[in-house]
Image (cartoon, rainbow, N blue to C red; front, side, top):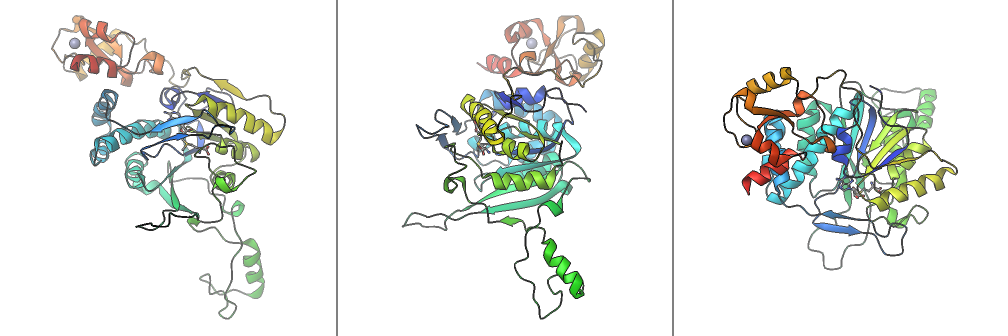
Length: 399
Ligand SMILES: C[S@@+](CC[C@H](N)C(=O)[O-])C[C@H]1O[C@@H](n2cnc3c(N)ncnc32)[C@H](O)[C@@H]1O
Ligand SMILES: [Zn+2]
């Protein structure tokens, strides 16, 4: 499917409504490094390039989450089970936030696409369950462990936590893996037992070729230092990831001209890596400081790019073909049957002529006229809701 945005677009805003407005199957590779539910607020140091960038990483269960949960319950029963495995309200709220976004990412990927989710051990176990429920266990490709070193405090009462996790899932059974572009040197090859490092015996020529070619890296990566130690890269963004790590991912799982998408792009590490490797890219971050950094960073990296597009609007999908006007009688009849004649707000029963067709996700938040986004409400509920999303109506009715 063709994209409904131009190459090198960077959006400022919440990625959920923006992703909802992006065409399906328009992206080859997604890398995301979302907030981790770390109970921390990240702020960039004053005076750094990223000063002013801040994001909250604490979660409480709100009415909005409950509404999402209702929607997930109806349409994605497996996902619903995973969310209910959460041990606290805060974890549940975080999982709902991630689930609705990962569902969109799944839709956005081409059938041959891949997603890499970067996280730390705080929520990794739950995130993997979410990915299993959305992408399917059979599409789990790798769990990459990014190991690094660093000082601990002198009186530690546990081991020093120094690794992150990156889960790779493909969307389907065909995926890109450019093994020759990410090979690394063999550390050693046991010369006494010819070819012992691989299964088949080798002639000396084969051996030389094998050594020269290098090997496909293992799933633990230890050569990428945290950005705090790479002065040339550091922009002061509190959660910045090393460029070399992103370059390996982009090289391995996309080709030139492919579309790379980072929905939590921070200071644009993914986008810089994609740009350097001649990939197309698109990014979103809720912080306007992050977006300014993206522009500065890409321009500084490549010299003269003038064609970066900054957007703040919610895009309108162009891939859903001819769809009926939302309040077409045919929609109304189908929905009347689906809801058994009940208003989707107050739950009371009405005759068909007393119910009105309404958008579940508000149009201004990227909701479409697609049947899946429509419901019937009684006149009263529809007036209360106005042009807002369903979460508003539910919160109002509960108050
Ligand atoms: C862990 S950081 C990403 C860092 C990035 N990988 C880098 O190297 O700079 C997470 C980012 O997600 C952004 N963010 C948080 N909630 C968001 C949302 N709902 N939509 C878009 N971006 C969001 C934050 O502003 C923050 O920049
Ligand atoms: Zn009602």
